[in-house]
Amino acid sequence: MRSSTSRSAVVLSARDVRVGFGGVEVLAGVDLDLHRGEWLGLIGPNGSGKSTFLRSLVGMVASTGRVHLGDGTAPGPRDVSLMPQAPELPPGMTVVEYVLLGRTAHLGWLERESAADRRIAVDALRRLGMGGFADRTLRGLSGGETQRVVIARALTQQAPVLLLDEPTSALDPGHQVEVLELVDDLRHRDGLTVVAAMHDLGIASRYADRLLLLEGGRRIALGTPREVLQDALLSQVYGWPLHVHDLDGHLVVVPAPRAPRHTDAVPDHSAAPAPSWGVPTDHRPVPDRAQEVS
Image 1 (cartoon, one colour):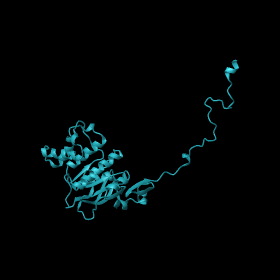
Image 2: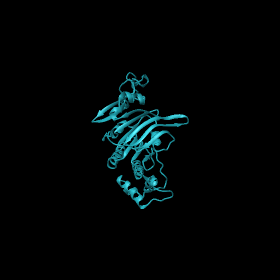
Image 3: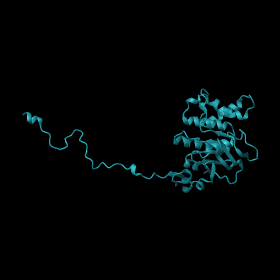
């Protein structure tokens, strides 16, 4: 946790947001106020409604309730951008062409990107260390490079609120930290408000100012990482005993080991006879054939 949100302005609010699919309510009346420049970590088990909530904030799913900006107006594509969990990467499209899609929110009907739009896209790539990749095709990128390009597209949209749905799910630990450090640096330099759905609770607590814990589409807890990451609460929500430890000032969440079962016992073969593998078992000396011949 790196900044305080107690005195910052509210940039986006959700009130009693509900989403249902096939008659089943998957988001059940979530309330939230997002503050300018904060990082909100969205946590909860699979199926808790994290992705649905992010999509409801940008109007990608039908919902009831209300989502509005700090001035009371409805948000648009210039206000909120979403980095999806599994973005589509069109075959044959170059990196800069893909990043330029982020400028769509600023273009009129049938209007093409201008030189200024291209400069914004190239600048986003440069800031992410991908300036030399502009003319490469998307399909030729590594996982970490692809994540950077997707973030560059979201930044090119120039929305003050950035929503990230599992931004590091396909990355190894080193690249996870690299991408998250990059987003954190950009939010401090540009004043972005970040909402990130994350599975790793320890990583979420490292970057988030606040955590929103969802279960079954309902808001269970909202507060600082130390307020939300409690052994009993997490164990109940995740359905497994979890223990929270403080390691050099960082919270680490560790699942309790599985209790041993009788079927897991390792058989004791210490009393079994050793295999002979063709060696005589009576240990009698082998006759000296040379002496017999003589």
